[in-house]
Length: 312
Image (cartoon, rainbow, N blue to C red; front, top):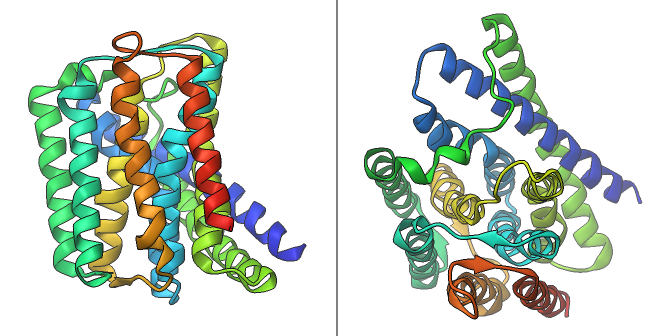
């Protein structure tokens, strides 16, 4: 029971820390007159990926690489299977051209590159992480240079100017919260794995990955219920891109990530690849450039099968 409380408390602190870091980062960027488009693509995306990044780095450094990999693989599958599936049950999503022009192709490139690296020798090392991060930088440059209209909605609605004292206070508190939350989460996750006699991979793919996807789920559901703005599939696809290229890229540049549980490469990564591929035909059939509740049911069914297969 105490292990579960550690996990819940750790996730709560991680989410709060990520929100504080996001608020401070956006305010600081606006304070020094960085264009909103650039802020949306870079600062916001990195800040919202901070919980996954901190958890992955800490897990790998503490000797739990499967927790690090499972977190990203599970989070990417949850973003498209669980989060998008639930969102579609609440309302339809109209898809923009940027989905097939940039978002989906780059996500597939990032996914396939990750698969190639991990299948090559079952470890992500410095140069592989560096190459993934360089691709991310090139992608960001391309968006800023050529696809500005595709990322305008990446900015949070509550972006505002803050005095420097508040900005640095939020940065400090957010950073401490991310560190403390990751400590509690990893401690609870590893202990729970031992208690239930399962691998860190299973806890990472189920409990940890779903927990770190809660902010995306909450934001999507709230936006649908309030009908304040269209939900962008690009936001979830972009989150997956950052998880692969930034989270795993930066983590493997700090410490090599070794596959321990073979099910990660024998099964889990193929489910992540499968749900990523599935999104493409769903966008075009039966109605072009639109996703609705039947698509949501399909995605939730696939995600349920993924979780069932994982815990078997």
